[in-house]
Each structure stands twice: as C-alpha cells, then as structure tokens.
Length: 362
Ligand code: M6R
Image (cartoon, rainbow, N blue to C red; front, side):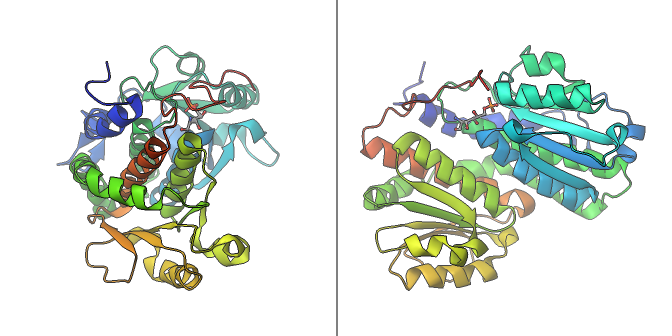
C-alpha cells in the first residue's frame, strides 16, 4: 500500500507532481489564458458584484487559505479575509448577498469548518467548499464544491493536499478576477503557465531528497526551529513549522520575518536553526536583514532562494522562478525536512501522538 515507501507521509509527499497535474487537468486553457472550474455554478453576476471573500479552515487548510487570500486580493482586487473556522462569526456591516464564504478542508468532515459554513449559510451567505473528499459533509452542504483531486491522503500530516488546495484557490482567484474585469491578462497567463510548470518544479525539489536528509540529520538536535517568510512565504513558513512540530514533537514556530525582532528573536541561539523563505515574491531583500539578525546570534540559516541569490547562508536550496507559486516548491523542502527530522527521532510519523486525521469534534 505504501508503494515501497516507509511511511504514507513520504509516499504522499512524493505523489505531489501527480496530484498537482490532476488538480489542474481540464481546468486551464493556456491558449486563451482562461480557467474553467466546471464544477462551479456560481453565476458570473454574483462574482462580478462580490464585496468580500471570507476563507475559513483549520490547520494546514488554514495556511492554504492564507495563501488564497493573498492571491484573491492581488489578482481580483477584492477584499478577502481568512479566519480560523473555530473563531468564525459573521460579524456586522456585511451584505450577505455580496459575500462568499469559502471553506477549505481536505477531509470535508472537520467539525469546526462545517460549523463555520453552517453559520454563514444561516446568515444567508453563499458557501463554496474546496475539499478532497467526494461525498463528504462539506461537499453535500455547501452551495458549490470544487474538488482538489489529490487522491487519498492517509498520513495524519497533510502534505500533498496543501499544494493542491493552493492551486485550486489560485484558479478560483483567476476566475473571480476575470468575472470582475480585474484580471491583468499578462499576470493571469503567467500564473497559469507557472501552475503548469509547478509539477515539474516540485519533482525537482523531490529529487533533492538526499540533500534535505543530510541537512535534517545535521540539525535534528536543535532546541527549537523557527520558520520565517514574508508575503506568500508567510503561510508556507507557518505550514513548515506546523509540519515539523506535528510529527517530530519539536518546538517549531513560524511567523512573518518582520515579526522576529518584536519578540521571537529573544529565543534565537546557536541551537535554534532558522528556515527562511527568500524566493522572489517574498520580499527577500527585507528578509535578508532578519537573517543577519539571527546569524549574529549564532543561529544557522537554511535558506530557500532564487537561483541567482549569492547571500551567505549555512545551507541554501534553489527554487526556480515560478512567480506566485514559487513558495509551494519551497514547501516541499520543508515537508522533507520535517519528515527526516521526525524519522531520525523514530517518531510515529503517520500517526503522531494525540492527533487524528479528521477532527470531527468542535
Ligand atoms: O481535513 P481538514 O483539511 O479540514 O483538516 C484540518 C486540520 O485538522 C489539518 O490540516 C491538520 O492541521 C493536519 N493534521 C496538519 O498536518
């Protein structure tokens, strides 16, 4: 069942190129630069007049929503919010008829997310579910559903589904932008090209597994691990930290790079490796200052950079130029890093203590 891999998590990390191809199959017209989310029945009139898109989710799916929020705002010039599903309330001052709530859930059964969607629905807000699971409660209850088509994910740690969720949210952002007449054709076409190159770029990262394993072996003894990134690097930094803490039981924290000096820097020592996202769209020049701050306290830096970055890092991995989806390639390195640290420690990788794959209680 694990197809020769030691763990489902590893198998699922390696399935990402296929999952990503499935996510976009038949949904992109590269010639016209258009997206066809055939399963979406929301009218063009509704999307063109939309006032706010509210994303709700938990855990890894929440990080995918943080990414999606930025894409929607950037491409469609519409207000977008993201909230932990367990914290969601409709709030006042919104026109329910011009609001769309987008729930994102791998399982489609997460109680907190279903609850948030039901609250929205009761308030007359239209709901869209983005899920991996056909026939799930989310799929049945939402007004619309788009499947991410990642295939079954058995490991408790969400891996391939994160990338596929972000890809679907990117296609959704293009759709909204297009319907609102906000889509810059060059930016739209470029994003679609990058989405098509993403599976190959992810494979490139997977091919460097042995190098990541060496880095993980070298740093597994760290006291704590910090993940930093700006803009689209931020959700991926948070996701990298979640993955590591979940399966290795090490203390790991992710935050926007700029927040370092507002508190977390006090924790940085030579025993706290810092994993930093410095790819093109993540404001690398500003993050480089943060890197100096941690290096001057002795912390080793593992950096994910553009290929022409000649900065001074303890370890560096190149990420090809893929515009808005570049951080998804860096994320694959972070998944492999978490996996190998946990493996070095002999953790129960597919079934970490205290956690369930599908959290069906609020
Ligand atoms: O099925 P969902 O996407 O709704 O699950 C949400 C979270 O419980 C889930 O992403 C959790 O954070 C993962 N175990 C993280 O790897």
